[in-house]
Length: 78
Image 1 (cartoon, rainbow, N blue to C red):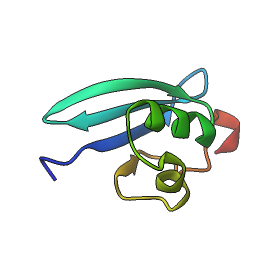
Image 2 (image 1 turned 135 degrees about the horizontal axis):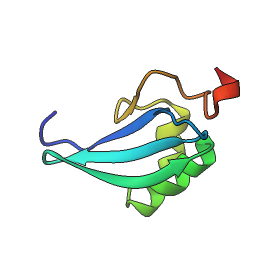
Image 3 (image 1 turned 135 degrees about the vertical axis):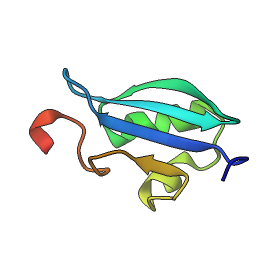
Image 4 (image 1 turned 90 degrees about the vertical axis):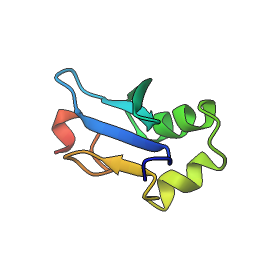
């Protein structure tokens, strides 16, 4: 997996939302803070990933969810 890009959705932050980074070639690049799956789709599309909505909907292994799963975006969700 060293050559493959991986999107990391980090745990919910102290003020809500989840940081999203892309990890490729040993470097992490921040994409932004997502407050919903729709935000994540927008970030992935802006990063040039084709069919970003399908990646999120089918829970593609390209996306690594840290701690909370894809249904948690705020502290109240968990």
